[in-house]
Image (cartoon, rainbow, N blue to C red; front, side, top):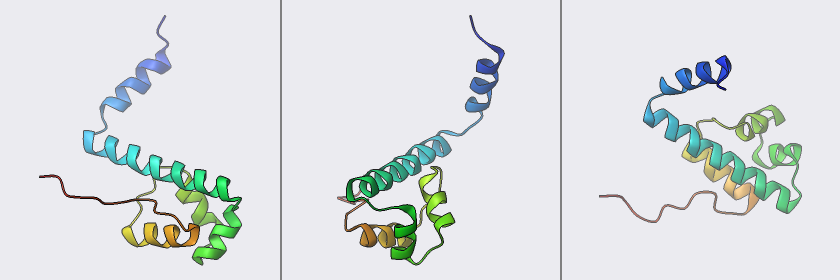
Length: 93
């Protein structure tokens, strides 16, 4: 049996453009990668905030998913964590 909430959710999801949907998936994957590295290295949000010279609330936004990371922010976080979060290997043609 389909619930009304499922129909509403499906209708709203259908309104999201494919590019916005893929952007959300990518930013969510980046946030998950940051979280995974932090857990593996035992780094807290407060520590990452200190390492990146940001407020803890900014780190919370990063980890919440859907944050539109700039290249500068990704480099900043990568340097602080000592890992490559994103690796560009070539260009699609």
